[in-house]
Image 1 (cartoon, rainbow, N blue to C red):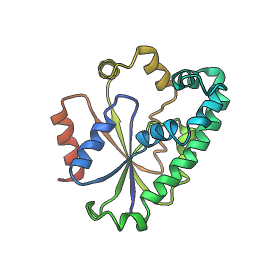
Image 2: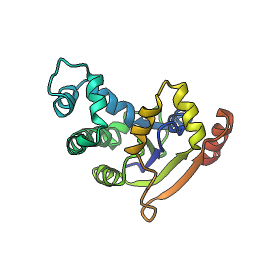
Image 3: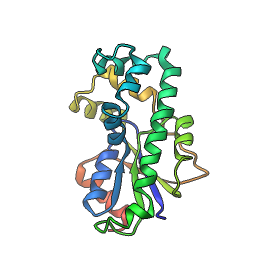
Image 4: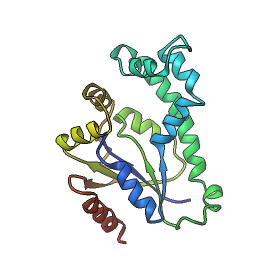
Length: 201
């Protein structure tokens, strides 16, 4: 069974770029965020609408807005628990010896999992469902100024950025994992150099 290294960071910190660099150099990286979005659009669509919009004919974008409302906190936690159960099952399969033995294109190093910067209560519950051993967390950080610039480049409105940040946290149990911080405050080439140095490539 391979070790697991988590890649996390607040929205627009650059964790997807770190994942891309690792992937381009032959590392096995699982994108949990994309997996979750795909599930909400497909397998979990009706459950998402059930929790946040009782009318299935209403556009899913309306339900996504209600997801962030303070009054929806209980519904949000219930839905997140259901979604996290599904995601952890998928990740346990993708990190199993059975599956990895068929992935000859990847090296025998650890498996990287890109995850959003979950709030502490959700982070602890979620990773407790993993079968593999989490040995390290890569925390990708940036300045608020650069985060705002990148959000605008991705057409994320200020209120959308603020809503997502309210449901994210950089607090990680420091006594349980090795924490490696990668500052993403420069160019892509500078970030690439940091990631390759981390991997000793």
